Length: 171
Image (cartoon, rainbow, N blue to C red; front, side, top):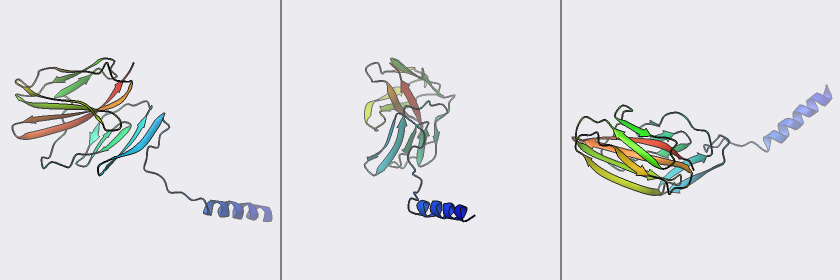
């Protein structure tokens, strides 16, 4: 009985000196991951995970599987998410060209920007859509295989809609 008390006391003392708080960083096993600070915003990301699921957003966060990003609070325009029926992004994963298939109900401005996992802008484009359904394409053949973030904004009649998409580039 004394040896059991001694063992429990030893475990309690060894645990007392090595208590650690849980990190908010990436918690899944992955090939790479880090925390990057850009201006006043901090981005946590993990690369090399099998990803599935949808992009979720709130007024302050944009969450895509494997990438947690602060939302853009620099404008006074409150943006709603773009409906999945209003915009389709395909194929994903992609080898050479990403297609954006809008199905909006009239003319407006479509802006889409592609970022790498370090939040560096790779390319951006703004187009005025006359019917709201003109298909767009983005060539990614020259990019390295990896995970990218596609941020899309649709503006129509004084309203703004925004969504982010996690793009997996292969080959």
